[in-house]
Image (cartoon, rainbow over all chains, first blue to last red; front, top):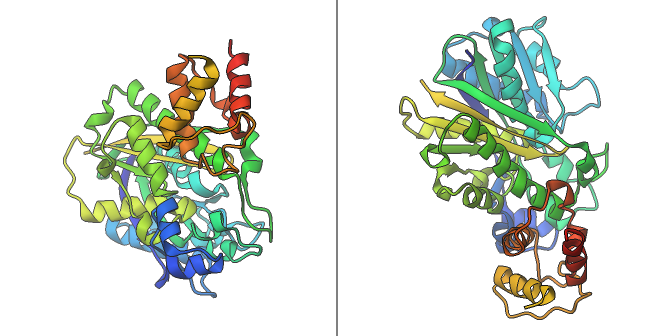
Length: 310
Length: 77
């Protein structure tokens, strides 16, 4: 049985307000908050790399788990904002954690990467042992690319999240997951090397508004779980307005959808695990509670994962 | 009520504005529909016309004007 043992996170210290971000594109902070729910985000220092942030989140996760890095059997690192075309940050992250030789696999997927990582780790853990899933993003370098677009530049932030998946024990058992991809929409949300991020916002929102609730509904239905019985939904923090729409579509109060996008913005693939880490730190868990994860992003890739507190 | 009038009524419901857009007026470029109102309009049309619009058809261009919406709905029978 796969279990989630712990989460961890790292946020850089520099706070960038929506007033500051809005000024890059001649936009008021009120507009930014209105269209996204984002009040501020964190930006990494110039010398801070994706793997630096990945290592910080991983160490936080391992420390909370009481597990040594040397006990990790596989590392999965999701990032759509790494420094190089290849290799991605996974091998470097494992090296900095002091575990060279451990297989370290990159998931260059952007927003849905952490969800795919958790799903893959849950399927692999019985064969390989402890799998450390990390998602780290330095989106500040992406939003700095000219020309800056109003609908893109103000959305993103930097950060990293991590989760430890084990085959034998943890705070929650992973019961099921579903992941899917549709390459027809690849041009609608993409990042070419040294080019600004390209996003067809209408298509992204339209598809995400359908696919996230669809993935959640089908997962819960086949596991005979009533959406109303789920006390917490942990989503990729893309946009507060999208989170509200997903909650409406599922038919549960928005308050069940943990949200920290106001503080950190959209940290792409890192956001779901950062949210999970904060949620775990601030909420009391009850045995038997279902927990639902879901994400949607460039690719398009999307999916959902169901766990139950042990 | 004919189909065009129903579409206009749905747009009014979704935008909560008493609008009367021209049939060939871009609902997006004119600012009548934003990214988040479009999914609401699609959902309202599915309910009103008793159809399911598949994800593969969810291309904003198909719903950019009243004429295009009519054309799409016509293609669905």
